[in-house]
Amino acid sequence: MGYLINNITVLTWNNGTKIIENANVKVIGSKIAYIGTENQESSGLEIIDGKGKVLMPGLVNCHTHIPMSLLRSYADDMALHTWLYEHIFVVEAKLTAEDVYWGSQLALLEMVAGGTTCFADMYYFIDKIAEATAESGMRGLLSRGLINGAVLEDYSEDDRLNEAISVFRDWNGAFDGRIRIALAPHAVYTCSPQYIRAIRNTAEKLNAYIHVHVDETVKEHNDCLQQYGKTPVKHLYDTGLFDLPSIAAHCVHVTDKDMDLMKEKNVTFVHNPGSNLKLASGIAPVPDALEKGLNVALGTDGASSNNNLNMWEEINLASLIHKGARLDPLTVNAGESFRMATANGAKALGFSETGKIEEGFCADMIIIDAQKPHYFPKHNLISNIAYAAQASDVETVFVDGKILYHKGEYKTLDKEKILYNVEKTCNRLFQ
Image (cartoon, rainbow, N blue to C red; front, side):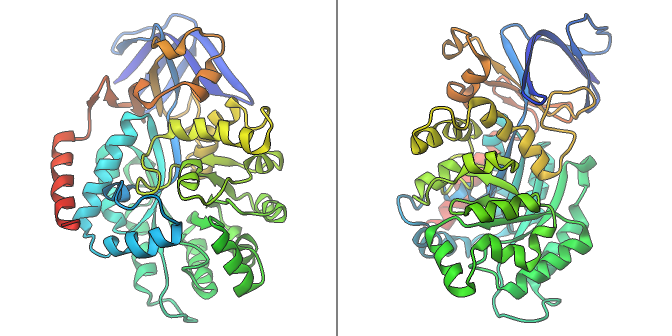
């Protein structure tokens, strides 16, 4: 089974934005077999007419909590710690595994239709999130958020950590590598140093990635300075956590020295502009991170703090807010934001054969309708992607060479069933 996409504009990244006009793209099995302008043999392939359309890598959401789609619009317009401790944690205590499954399915509906093909998640009941992800056909780096209770020297009997280990053994590398499992100490304010070290040592034995919230608020930053005499980044660096491949979500208040430490350890800086603006956490120093050569990726955070999983909005915000904050129209250009949402994200999550439209890469890609009014006149495609594109422009979504979504039709997800069960779940949770 395969596809031949004819006469399409290809947009990708190859040490700079790369645009190929009137291209033919052949997909055989899960891989991109050909990209170019020569005519291709089409026998046995499904033909897709690409005239007036753009083929680009699927978007990569490097930080989210997909079951929290159930809490969308539930607790808005409040400070992060009030939002988290007085509202979110209260409802989350009621969640069942089945709730997490349907909340995940709801989020997957939204992400697929918006062109997201890969994501990094941190939550619990990870086996149900993995099940939903597997059914959707999407690609994900999933992790059990870890928060410790008592401070111990030995966490070998810790239920949460052992659950994370079990999920790793059951799911890591499943479904032809579409699902991978990371370990996720939640944050410095919810994990003791001893617990972080236990997680770090466990991840090293498993050869697992790390996913952690870092320096999201002024309170987190100042509390860490007061408690440990160092910034959150330096604290995590000193525990040895960053010796492992790590994605650090938010990084709003990291210092210049912090970014040097992150660069030393190849930690990915995950920018969440929408969530950080809504919760008034601040604006992360992304221009400085880029200047230092850090791998910067994008994430939406959960739909309870954003309130959507729309990566196009994150691309747009990443291209705009730093210009305004720095009074510099040259900072964080359209190409950099595009790269954050595609190639940089794939690199961050360890999916090395995704994030680009390139021969031999996995066919994780999307077709967008560029015949809509907001794409005219067509002076600069990459600018249109960063400043004008909408999630509703996405027409077709491929992962591993399989179509998951096409012209409003879900191929792997049952929209009506999912929405019915979400309503049923929320009627119980919020009664």
